[in-house]
Length: 550
Image 1 (cartoon, rainbow, N blue to C red):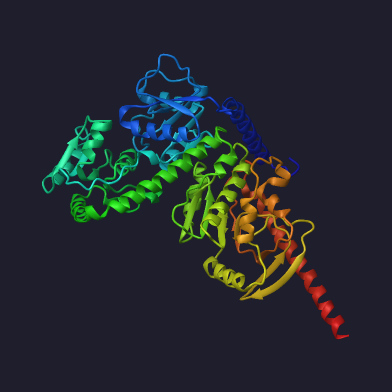
Image 2: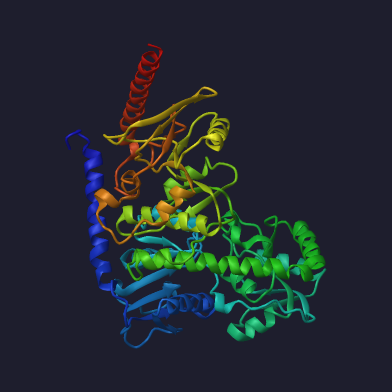
């Protein structure tokens, strides 16, 4: 208000009203001891329901699966899969809907269904494409939670090496989809193909394991990847040949367990089918790796959802391994549910960068701190000596690739550093310059305090500090992750002038609920202040040199 930023003030007010509402609703779920959850599902999503039940059990939460609505909704909370298929639903304040339809078709997204989603305690969705669609319907973060479909570890079966009865199996609705029918007819001309439409559960699983591979063809043109089917097959130890989709990059965990052919291209389907069968017997290891990676991701993402609803504690979350695709040293921290911000970031992702779906907490700063601490623990467990983490509102300046190499070369020979900070929005009032050096047009300044998490490189000492952060200390003034690092003693922070990176002004803060454009002046002021400290340090050094001469 003092700045006259009425838009920012109103946005922040809406942010806090929304957070207060979420806190009131979730307070009823804060003590899960003795909880019994109900899971409502249709037969074709029973596999997902079992994965959910298994993960709840890992946290000591009992659950019961229903294929039809119970007579009375007496359970403490319900997760409803395919809510539009049931004539009765649990009360709004104890109902979480797992939205499993594809937004590429408006068939199920009726006003009534959208109202059901909006009025539920929370919405789960497996696809970022769907989350983007729902955001356009005002069903958005923090109401929506991203939960890619995965596998429960206990449901993974070893690949069956016995002789197979057929080359491929297709299960699902092929009668009412002309494109599926056309492609399957062509496949049957060259391979033995089993078609199944009304088999479920154990009967279906037995049939799948008799096939060398599963063929997955979209019902709709330009459809999303049919992840329930794919994950169920991987859990059974069977590889999948799938029509490509625009969202397949969202699932790096699939690896070689799933192979793709060009969408709506019969010739490419036949080529890929022949190639897969030639190597089918050697795919067992890749299928197992994909299944286990999918299980790790599902466990983390479901726990992430439970923490957001305060069903489990932040400490419990940090006690479990987090999921990051691959083993890159460069990690981007991003909330997938803030989809506009995620899409903006995706247009400028560096090469060899893994994206970490940040931990959520009703207190945004606690979720942020938990994310950094979890990544530090993961890096230490992997034996890493340093890790680069940046937030998705970072702005990579021109010549970033060349400049970051200069930075890494400097750090490799520096006598002492704990953190390299790519930029700062503020400078601690007691910050002191410890050293200044110049390399290839860049000035490297070593300070004893820092306040920024936008782009940092952490060495092992700093990673140990992050790993020791306490998520139960709710004093935001001293335990917000940047303030926590700022108060550490004997810290050597290197920053480059000019700053290595900038900060996007066209996205919203996920922690505080205001536009990022307020940071521009803060960053410029911090850069100017550091330059001033450098000038003072240089004058002092010159004075000492003169004194030594005399």
